[in-house]
Amino acid sequence: MNRKPGCLRRPRARPGRLALAIATTFALAGCERAAPPPAAPAVDSALLLTIDTWRADHFGAGGHPGVRTPWLDRFFRGGTQFSQAYSCVPTTLASHATMLSGRWPSEHGVPRNGWPLAADVPLLPDSLADVHSGAFVSSAALDPRLGLARAFERYDFEVPHAVEGDQAWRSAGDTLARAREWWRSRAGSRRFLWVHLFEPHFPYAPDPIDRAVYDTGYSGPADGSMRFLYAMWDDPSLLPPAARDHLESLYVAEIAGLDRVVGPFLAEILAEPSLLAVITSDHGESLGEHDLRFKHGPYVYPADVRVPLVLTGTSEFPAGVSDRLVRTID
Image (tube, rainbow, N blue to C red):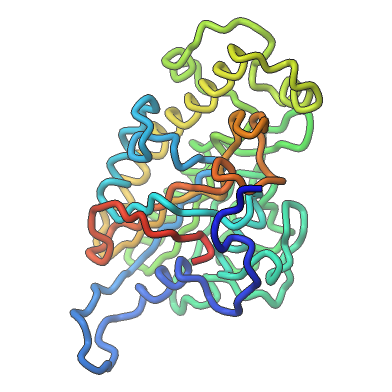
């Protein structure tokens, strides 16, 4: 199996650098140091935006000009983009537990969805003094009973959409509306906001406007529904090349639609001074590579664990692309 460097190494007992980037930038500059470098600007607030099941190579700034993501491209190109960023586990709950704790799955005890996080595992908001913390999540995998909610002052969870199987979610527009209301209600205060968006996770059901843009002309049974996907996972013969291309077009259309919805939200948040924003994903998606058909979870191929990552909003993270190998635990 083609494992990426470091993603399954022995655990280390240390906070992750991604979490520290948020936690330490809240601190005021001016600590005594020997020959200190120029002080970084203080950060009053921070945003962590995680987009579920988003591959690193499926947006414009990620090198795919066929995916129309002008808003996300703008924000990625305006900050420090990491082109070789990897999640250490390709499932939603475990990946977010890693990001928010800086601990490996084998250390925090959540190997995949459905496993509760132990109460003694510290999370990022626990280290933020005098900071309002809010989380607005969009997947049943992040149910507050599984442990992440305890660290947040507000943990907004609602999944009104459900389909056959185990998928339940809230649409990006609804999640962003609630997050925006919370953010505005605490204007003038120091805030840490985590927003998780479900799209482009399966089932693939893009807005008809976006679907039309990427339409391949396919008219067969591969409609992106959970019913079809479950059948296809059991019977690979159901995915001839034309059907595969069509399913990828639906995945791409969901990303394009999400860009249109999340763009104005990000523009409003990032217009504030002294704000750090981190935009990334919990994991990717196999779109046929290695005979893995539109799924994720058991595998750590690059398609499943390489993710977009940008840090933006402060002068500490200037515009540019770094090819340094990083991980969301970092």
